[in-house]
Length: 154
Image (cartoon, helix red, strand yellow):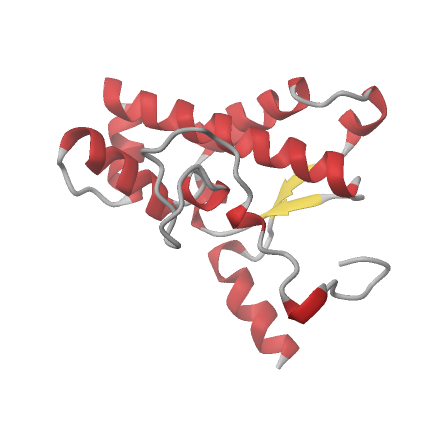
């Protein structure tokens, strides 16, 4: 949102930040088929896919989070990769847009073991002290924020 208006870009295609490349990791495959995209490293679907690729086990994101909290070494690697990707994406957005605030939504926003390290790390990736004060918050609407937003837009 820029000056209170949804920024739509050319052909209403602005805002596809999930397809921003944030990693050279070819194991992080996005839903579009490309690799290294933010979406492939910062979502519940990504968490499950990365864990399955490494272990062969098909766990949902909640189960991967439980494995991480229980000390599973593969889950720890998955979380580190995801935190790095999310931190890089946040830093890129701040450098490009210099927004007043960034709001993280979806189910992944509830995963403290991922979000907290990513929020600490993104500031280290910023080049200007002035933009290190950009707040990054979690949506208050939870994982239904996108559905509620689309409903209001319609």
